[in-house]
Length: 264
Image (tube, rainbow, N blue to C red):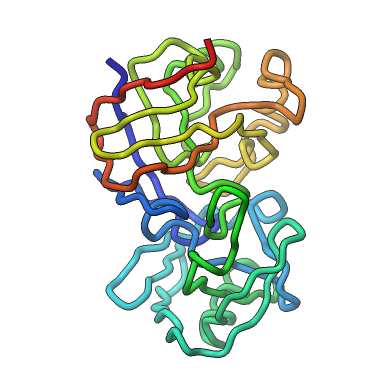
């Protein structure tokens, strides 16, 4: 029986992960997932695609916001903007989204950490801030959730000279106990009380080259170059599946996964 091997969420898009024993799922993703965003002063989103060092900043949620940590710097405490705080607009993949600025202290800290002028913003109301055809989503690229399998990673790693960890692919839910690439056929899953609709394959980019602990690129072009030799599909080089929660609830590491519907 397939089961949940690991869970992750990313409080700030493209910063370090948090890996709890359970996740509460909402229509727009895991609770706390990618509600914060780093932008340029003109509101354009920033990711590890152009700034790999973002991986070295570690967020930790608190009751009224979060802290950001980076080696060699004093921790930053950030308070969530009030719901009635002034709004600004930011851009994620050509889509304009309403958000609230986190203030000058956060902007100065991030600018010093990443050596460029930056701002930090917060999405207060994901249910309305970024409507999509399937519902709503936070600051994630396109879909609320990303699922992967350890068997598929193992198959990829057999083809690589230097194996990579699953963290390179920044999933939310990692499954164990499947055949390699079994997820290609999945349409609907049940994990306890949660129901997931599997939307589409996830096209991968150069973020997979970034070591998520050091913020460096240890082996240029890998694993994307090798992945492209056998996982190139219309739309890109695929690893993992985008998903949407059809029925909300909590998923836990160790939960069994029931495959309800497949393509074949």
